Length: 479
Image (cartoon, rainbow, N blue to C red; front, side, top):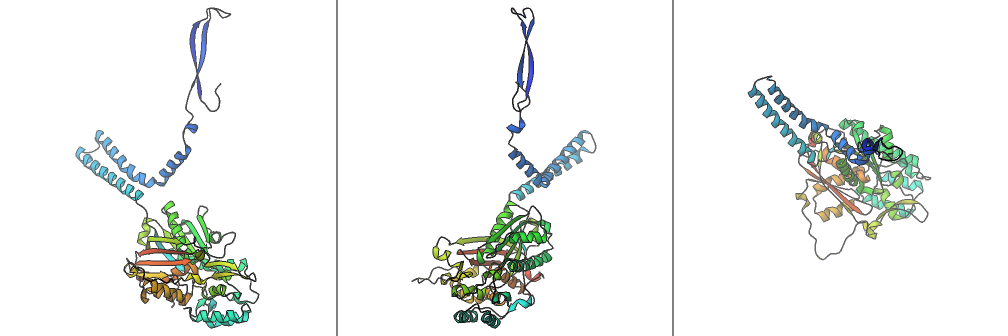
């Protein structure tokens, strides 16, 4: 008997006539059992069958471009034998079709093997409602009435705001000034939803993007991390598809706006021909600190409401409507150094109140005997967007990088108008350059951001469209 799934076939063999025994004089037979059909399921690795099938399905168009011309040539050759038309004509047509088929094969192989370029199709920044605008004087008045701060903390905030570089039209939820204010998830979710959906709605309206085309969704928010995640919140709100690749980034601070671009670029290489939606925000209700430790009071003076939504794609046809092309992205992390690691962190004060602490080590002024070599960045980039942390930080960066006031204009204007909106700040700066009509086809834009960790990220874009001619939603349009 055969065992398992082995396929056996019997064979009867005549052995002759028995010489003795009870069957003497009778013909003798024996039965041989040989293996029949092979066991394909056990001999073939189904993993490679699946990969081959997937490759065939994903490259159907390419195969058609190659096979169809060859098929036509074969049919023309067959028609020659059937004398359907003149021999010479058929020969010339056959050569033309053969050349066309070869050309299609070359183009297909080139496109299939050439790395895809990541394009920034468009982006949008949320502009919060006007009723959330707050002046510096109103901020101090509300801080005094809240009862959350002692006189020293109030005076410290007055000095910081005076030299901060912020204007009187930044956005802040006034609920944080309530005497009994406590961080609660419902309010945090509402703030995050309003900001993120505001930016995404603007982006969808500008690009006319079909929601079902979004293959990758990345959301980053430094402090607020809920269950379900903020990315799941957007999936539920916009009813995105089941096959979407969703990621939620937390705890990476102001530098996450570039970190998520890096992640989206890698995912687009894994899912070529897709759209990636990157949403960046920060929830001020959860960064707010109502205590008296000055290193934790400091972020209250700078962090403001804001959000951005960025649409990336490596579809080749997006070259004709995209705004920018990704050229270079560099990320540097100094988390191995204890001083850098602890320079920005969430902690509790002596009374158990939680807040964001920023130490003085965030700005290191080293005493050196000789000036280090500083390349002329003005020769490499036409525009620079530096995270608008504070006026003091921008002054130091301008000095160290030897940049002119024109290069710093977008950063300083964003700090004045919108404050530090964390990871979305660099997109408000790029929106400023577009609103001013400064970005022209071929211009190179350098975005530089840094945050907790401590990390410094930079990305370089090349403009592939003249934004002066692009009339789309922009948070600066009414300025």
